[in-house]
Image: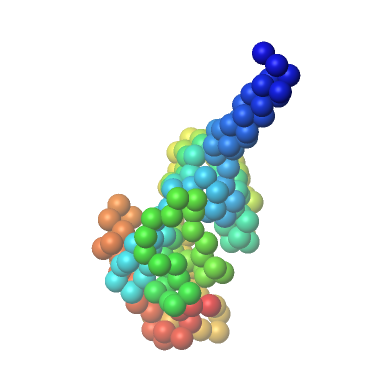
Length: 166
């Protein structure tokens, strides 16, 4: 085998190993990366469902942490013009700065949470519900029917409605 052929063969093998290494590491940051995601229309909201395998990093102040293993998140986003459109997203979906009104997270494996509501380590399985707090100077009536296993049946209404998208 000539030197040029060997070199070409090595380059092809290395080029194939790089995506394979990324796929095996299955890394995601804030719901983007090696993530299965879909956005579902619901009554008054859009539901963002994500699944990650491997290492998942979260950096939002109220939900910062790392999960090594499996995580499944369901986020209820008000039906704003900035909310992601319904559909399937192969490498995750960005919320564009929108804060979920509520989110459910199921984790399996090792989870390390370091945020405003939780500091701790979990080994095993957990399911948590996070509901967005209402500011001290606001008076809001919130109606949320949460059915995590049937996201299209989720209902969301909030009065007054001017606070839905910030």
